Image (tube, rainbow, N blue to C red; front, side, top):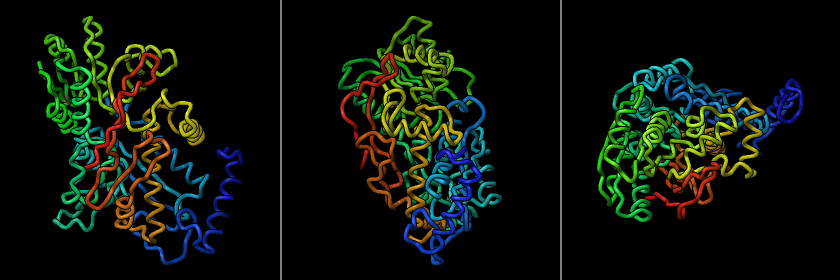
Length: 431
């Protein structure tokens, strides 16, 4: 059954009728088919806009990343069926496993461009893996001329490097950058917990190092220990024990969820209770599921009980904090109707990303330019754009020289029931 309750065959007939009706004129350029003055490029046919993504679908990161492209795809299906697609065309989305490997990310990206012929990348995941592909995406023939690049939109990685539009003109970051997040958390600690000591666990790559550097640049207390780990490490128990041995008041975990939870579990086993700080990449629902042993309600409840008091940041709505908000209720309905993942903070992120992509494609359609360059220019035109799932006061602001989309964060404290206590106002990172 289609989400509207119509049989799928009838829904398909109605969709075709919408396309035929749209061909009569261009009154609704953003959604309906338009007349022949539309410029198109690779990945755009008379009935389809093909998008691609490299992401992690196997290994330690799969539990974190898999719900995101599923939610993004579900929202695209919703737009196709309920809104007639974009510009009279259905959005097709292909995402491939890069195994969190730079070499594999490059291989996957080449296939998406040279074999599948995508119009644009959307939501490519992972700082170290994307660094393996970004030069190719911005200059496929490696001749030093980036004119033949492919739109690399709304990266699911917070490296501040993506903001360098002069080096990578086709790439646009989506999530707030890790350096700024580390700085914000340090400022929060300086004010809320002055004089406390800190220890840091960080992933030994661009992600962990930039977050660590941001924290160190602003923290006014003493850092009594630092430990790093490789992204492929099986565990971080020894590093966690070394940090705990320094008896810090605070431990900043610039780590991804599996390792974040290992550090927390080690502290619990040792009877230690430092104040943990974590970044928004550690979605609260993911941490709760890992700590509680699963995503069943009673397991999540146990996980949130163990998370009580942890300090984090947010820029989108979260579960269960905003679960009864109209936008999240609608999001849950879309995920259920279009084969999306279960409701979580990660599914919310995946739809938020998709909403920004759809707005970009609509603007490109309205500008009569669905070429790769037209899609990039449409993305750069986003100013003051608000997704349905953004926290109040959080906007997407971009421009030709501003390739970082979200630049505002809310510091929060996780409560034992999974809800969040807001720690002061949203802090904007706009420069």
